[in-house]
Image (cartoon, rainbow, N blue to C red):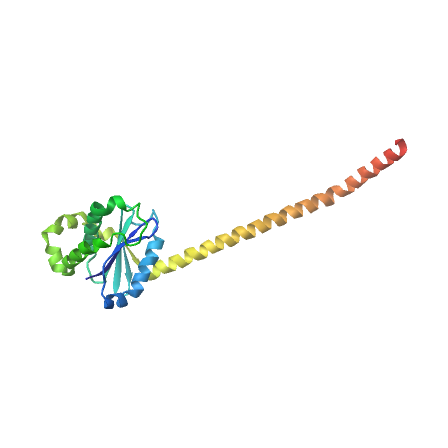
Amino acid sequence: MVKSTIIVRASDALPLAASVDDEQTEKTLQEHKQQSKLIFRRITPNSEPRCSIESGTYTLHYLISDNVIFLTITEKSYPRKLAFSYLDELAKEFATTYGAQVEGTRKPYAFVRFDTFMSKTTRLYQDTRAAANNSGLDKLNDELHDVTRIMTKNMEELLWRGDSLDRMSHLSTSLRSESEKYRKAARNINIQAMIRQYAPLGAVCLLVLILLYWRFG
């Protein structure tokens, strides 16, 4: 079943709206809600627009639409097709109601009133059999007939990739620093080599100039 939902702006992860969860749900999903924040930070313009990320007994499904990320946490057994139908419904209603205001808002949870629609839609999707048979979902189900093509990832893989990217970034910075040191060292070596090569010739020329000045000066 659908356990929790949050809506954020994709460009800066500003929270726009979220479901009102009871105390037990908050406690149970504390770790997964932290993971959702990690997902928001990982998302880039090149990220998959629809993705399911498995984490223990739950799955985090997200959908990106018009610079807005819609993410819901469901039980792992909950059908992906229904999860994305649910997110599609939220995305369409949110775009109609608040779409024009998304870019200009600066206040977190500026569209908290959207919870009313989320709560109603969540109840509709809690019973998977009723939701699947609901005639209002037929069109959405048709649009999601290729749901098997939606990217599926594992949270551990995502965390590992993030760690690797961080380490690669650090390694790249270190390599640039070391490369700059080597360039400076090479430049100093070249200068010293030139001095050793041309110093005797310079000394001879200086001596000749002194003799000429002494003789004809």
